[in-house]
Length: 141
Image (cartoon, rainbow, N blue to C red; front, side, top):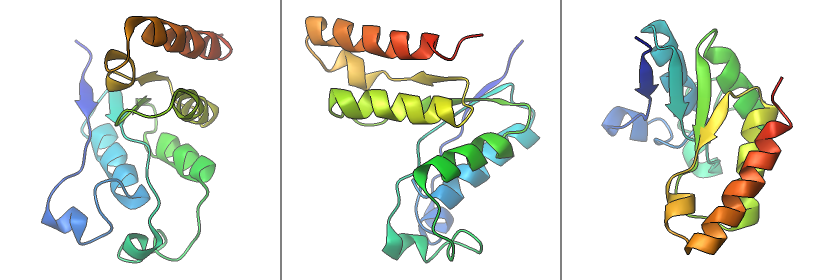
């Protein structure tokens, strides 16, 4: 039976080190899921906040990582565990497709975007789902 872990860091200790959406927290959560034996890990895409990022341990607090570098590092931290990136809160259509593309470019296995589809009128949701599907097909082997 495959083990899928929604690895979403939470709690006071995480908030004290940059917050639940920091690169540090998401990278650490990904690694923990892999070490626990997850076959697939679902994680958020990190959000960068210079003030909060200073609270994270080194090297996360001193190096400026690009979004692409952070996503690639998260995928590397997963080892053989497959990584699926979450869509998060509802965003503009172009941002949703860009988020999906960034995750796939980093080596992610796929995306899971519930609210970004369900919270749209049906015609918009179908159009966006088609765009994401077309983009994902570019990465299929």
